[in-house]
Length: 157
Image (tube, rainbow, N blue to C red; front, side):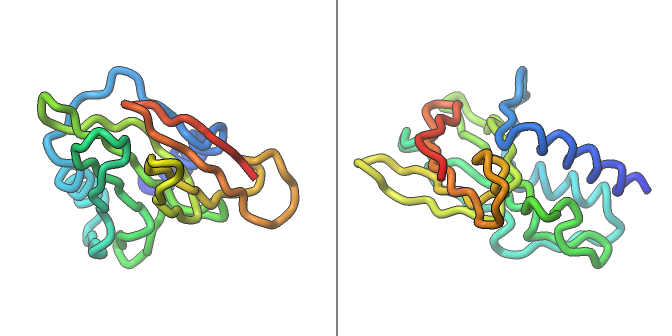
């Protein structure tokens, strides 16, 4: 029941905006340990795929950051319990020079590509069409660049 309420709350928060920047976040030493410990405390048995955490430089500052994919774990036999018709939650962490990681955004996405455009690495998110203000069934493609600790939307289609 507690897990269901948490999933409903997460979904409600993510439906309002595809990216929710967090205010006054605390630094975490390692997002992988932090998130796995969280899910282990929520589940009797938590299992994580090898792609649960992806490490890459998302804000083009030369420091390796991290992305967690909540569709890449199983909680008590249920794969990606917070995933729904909008996709799965992904948390985006930027590593800061002082040490540690800052959670800068959460996005509910079907998936993404991380590609180079005009010399900068950008995300191309595949999302529910409503995030592009559409009512058809084709996924929204939102191109986003991370500058420092902010997501900047370049285009939507």
